Amino acid sequence: MTTQQPGRDGSAGRKVVLVTGASSGIGAAVAARLVADGHQVVAGARRTDRLRALAESTAEAAGCSGGGLQPVRLDVTDRADVADFVQAARDRHGRVDVLVNNAGVMPLSRLDSLLVDEWDRMIDVNVRGLLHGIAAALPVFTAQGSGHFVTVASAGAHEVVPTGAVYCGTKHAARAITEGLRQESAPFIRVTTLSPGVVSSELADTITDPGAAEAMRAYRAHAIGPEVIADAVSYALAQPPDTDVNEIVVRPVHQR
Image (cartoon, rainbow, N blue to C red):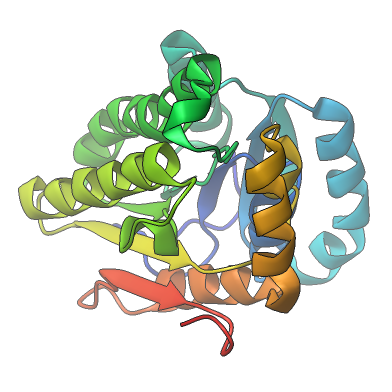
């Protein structure tokens, strides 16, 4: 059990925060920042070696602030795995205050490349993974009378670009699902959609289509660090209980 509990609205004090896709990039930066903020973070991803390294690197901050990071193996495409991830956190810490649905993949390609397996992977991770998180956490938030969903979408949720039809489609879906969740949820549940622009991460490393990979190298010439996105998440979580930060778009100044 945590030694310091937030209020009923989950908005003050030390929170129990679950972060998916936490082994690198935005997820790792968010997890590290929230530990530094003094929260208990349960970090989920498939690459547990990365999570263990992240736990070690944040240990000093945890000692100073009272936060900590618990690494947990997680596959967001497995609905039962996500349900266990949320329930285990609740059993161990007594509550779950925030779920940051961050896990995502981005193997861009033109539609006529017919990389159907990669399309399926994006749908499974970017859309089904988000829905699995909502399905697991929403009953917990409802039962305890508080909770905060944060969806890491993309600037691709606001536009469509060549080679990005499927990826942008999944991010448009993530934005729509999260906005629907916000409208349907009780007032004690806060919902935030965060749409990053070009961020330094490993996402582009999954692109197998040569044309898309070449275009992405030029596109990512002016990227911002994932810590900027972590700052935005921290801001949304820190607002008072009567304030719900619905949507944040963060881009490099060079991205138009």
